[in-house]
Length: 390
Image 1 (cartoon, rainbow, N blue to C red):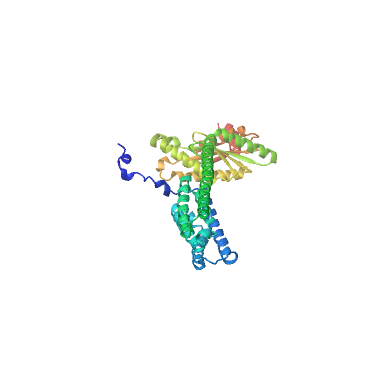
Image 2 (spheres, rainbow, N blue to C red; image 1 turned 90 degrees about the vertical axis):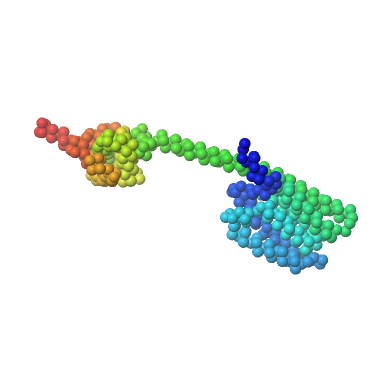
């Protein structure tokens, strides 16, 4: 048996919905701000009318001014400081609605009771509750307001049909306002929730699309561009460099001794080292530089507006950066980085040829012991010296 169903004490009361606060949304905060400003405006109009425009004979003016002063002492800080955005106790609730009803009843009693010109205050308060709360809550609040007003009205009632008719009309209008504004508010709230749901779905779709686009562009393990997208970006940089008549260098980087780590420590550790190498290299690159994972433990770097001499220095910086990944590895498992360098327009005129030349220069670096960089010039000198050393 369901524990909740079997324990009557755990069930919500039948009237629990009456005291439920609306969910905290941007709409409810806008309604709070509107109610706070309207409350302040109403108090200003009432004070002006009481001071300059109304015949106050027969009114308890002192009590009315005391009520206005107390209400202003609450309304001004709420409108200016907006504490309802931080504390729910300052938000409009059924409790505050009942306090409003009592305050309005006292003010109407002090300003003429059944003859008070301020009876529309109940209409405004009912409308404010209907804007802020559920339709059922606004109707219940309206009935409470009608009862309070009827008590004040009957207090000075001279028995007769005209007075009964006036009371009936005023109470009926309260109900009409509560139902009408409540329905409009419910429709607006429903639309607001639908818009929120659509925006949340759109945001979720955008995140999913972004993740899919990133997965399509970037290598999952290292976070570098994957080979296909890197080649597109590199070819675009070559075209820009050819148009501007500048320089561009390509670095072909291959890790030294990663296979030994995979064999002795496992591929999980090898992947962690590979990920660290990718991060270390990206950290040393500039904003316009490109880095992509070519395959396995090979990376290619494109350096726009970089000559061969500068590319040689940048390659040494990458080799130095990779040494930081060796922390925590035993001496016999330390890795290195062999780098081959080719520069546009001296060594090749297109990206595929630049990569091929840089790849050959990288093998020359490995041939000489690894963990160093060699340029296409070094490669040419090597082949020129081959007959002499043969």
